[in-house]
Amino acid sequence: MTLPAAAVSFVFSSAPAFADLKICNRMSYVVEAAIGIDDKAATATRGWFRIDPATCRVVVQGTLTADRILLNARALGVYGASPIPQSGSDMLCVAQDNFVIAAARQCRSGQTQVAFTQVTPTQGTDGNLIAYLAEDSEYDDEQARLAGIQRLLVIAGYDAAPIDGVDGPKTQAALAAFLKSRGLSSDIVGSPNFFKTMVDAVQTPSATGLTWCNDTPHKVMAAIATDDGKSVTSRGWYRIDPKTCLHPDVTGQPKQIFSFAEAVDADNRVVKLKDRPLNWGGDRQLCTRETKFETNEQTDCGARGFAATGFGVVDMSSGGKTLRFAVP
Image 1 (cartoon, rainbow, N blue to C red):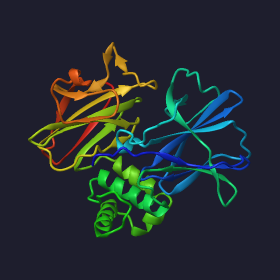
Image 2 (image 1 turned 90 degrees about the horizontal axis):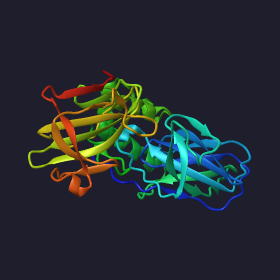
Image 3 (image 1 turned 120 degrees about the vertical axis):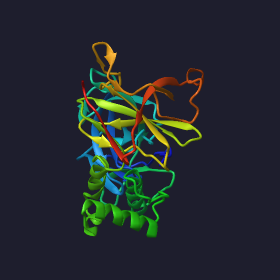
Image 4 (image 1 turned 60 degrees about the vertical axis):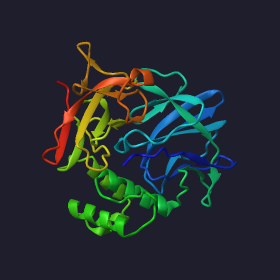
């Protein structure tokens, strides 16, 4: 599965800020949101708030006084390179893990700048203020939840495509196979924790396909390449948080798979040990670049704005392979 670029829209209208502020997710991704509060020339940020498809999360309780409310959202690392672009012009500081930053326009060690978008939430029927995260598909809550399940099923290796939020025999068969393989009853599908169950399953080493596991204390960014016999396609980056695993999306039955990964710090700089980058790859030179990428052209990398990077061949002869990234 190749992740499409999902457009994020923030649905809003003018409303007085006198109640709780909620972020509601109508995307097919489990997201983490951060908010910025711009008040009297001082800007503070806080995050990350995890929000499953078709659910809402209170991010500010009680009376909210602010000149502007700003929002940033990112997909979980399980989806690979984040499909959520940010169109805002406010560059504010965030941290990798849960954070509260009082002065968010001047980053300190361990903080990075990301783009925030200004929003003006609607007032809901319960009196609270609501901002919605949405895709171009304009899912309603039911469709967003089903599309979110379909997307994780595909990443886990089950054929639930297309990811469209429409139920049918194909989706139900994939879901039934997933539940059976995990020893789960059908009742869990309707539980509030079902997305956590699915994400945890996708992050568990698998007997089939490729799994990356990050055994380091650092964030790891990984790229994959597949050779279908006609061309080699390289794709990245996938974020793998410390002590977690990830299945990169691989479609079809490629003749060969290649992998590259590198550890980065909180400022997204490559971690070095004894002046050498902490990475895991090999001798096959394939094209990558710093930002999200996918290319099936592997010649003249530099001339096309890419970098030649050494990938390692992954032995998939047994049907499955788990690569574990560790500090030597």
